Amino acid sequence: MDDSENELSVRDARAHFATVIDRAQAGSPTVITRNGQAVAAVVPIEDFNALEDAIDRQLSREADRDLAENPDAPTHSMAEVIAAVFEDESHHGAA
Image (cartoon, rainbow, N blue to C red):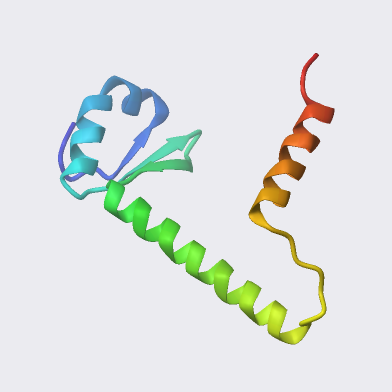
């Protein structure tokens, strides 16, 4: 695989997976395509972590804004949210 490539089909990515990982480790993302459409990317972990942090900050700002606009709105603890998620999964899970 040529180092200048930044886009690969699923088939080529599978065939050159170690190289795709090496490229990500070296700081170069690779876009994976299926039928000519971008469907995934293998990115350096630092980029992924930065994106996750940015999303968390944005969601926190939105929550703070929503609470400021409606201070009497009901709130839920993280424990309540997690319990609700697992309860929902138990009702929709496989037997």
